[in-house]
Length: 480
Image (tube, rainbow, N blue to C red):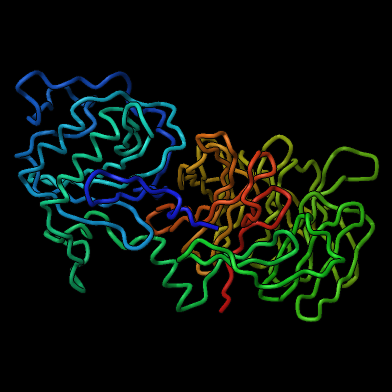
């Protein structure tokens, strides 16, 4: 299977190739802010190309398109390894700035591929980062801050950057202790190395990986190649298209076999045990791998769903959360004392597993506990959000790279530095696919790490990392 970066390459006339990778620049990825500005951006008058056009006010994409106002201009073009970086020659500032002299605010951005980013540092202070997108024809697309614009064309962007690179000097990495200081090269503006490069390094040195269960096997994702490697086969007794929950630390896999109930597989001994009182629509291990939270009908014959907790040692099941929503995936707090889930009214609920006391703490879906235990992340209006467990101090985390988010809540790595989620997209042939996205939380950069098929597609690659709603979500784990 080819990796995403191997599939997404844009060839340019001459000797340069500018690879395309959906790697968002800045804290957000696709959705414009509600107050992202409106209307068309005024074009420069004849004879003013590349000169200061600030008189048009905030409607311009950039604070200034005067080449003399620029102190430094850096470019990143995303590739699998390494990212192309160069510093634009001052003689070419006007060539680049003219690309942004006119444009129209785009309020409904599409699932574009990200070409790269341009960082502009001004002599009077301040920096602007422009994310560039490949649109495969028609007006080009780019993002400044929270606002998306259409203007110029893909061909014009690619041609200008090709010419700039031909006479540019490569960006140098900042010296130790000088990162982020004024006068650095590209590293000053783009802050740090690629998330994908960091993931590759952590996988090589610390064993950090994403695991998922699919088609009767447990798979590990190789961040470097974007390919899957089989970790373990599941016994034939286990239904291969169940909804799974994997506790890699305790080597236990729980799942719902359709029509049979809930099973637990000991990965070391391959022993399978069953709970056949009822099946489930979703299932989740606690951290100790002693209890399962399952979503199923509140009672036989009723359509209302509830969250039950099964003590696996005793097989005792208790209803702790009524009115659960289809698609909810209960998430355990770090101390295994509480569960978070969402109801059929999109209420976020925290329930104490022992005394069954429930609190509605907000509106949204797919809540998950953040490392530290005093905050929840959840999918809300136009993005992923974070709030305290009391429903206060609400903050936006990211705009997802996809309009349709599927599967379970996003999952954190154990050190809290990364999170993963699933998005559903479609290519130019209307073939659906599932993308696994990893978010580096310190700067909220998003990087796609795997693309797989979806049951609704008319052409599927066959293997998918956590690729469908009923199967195993991508799970961070350490495995060598």
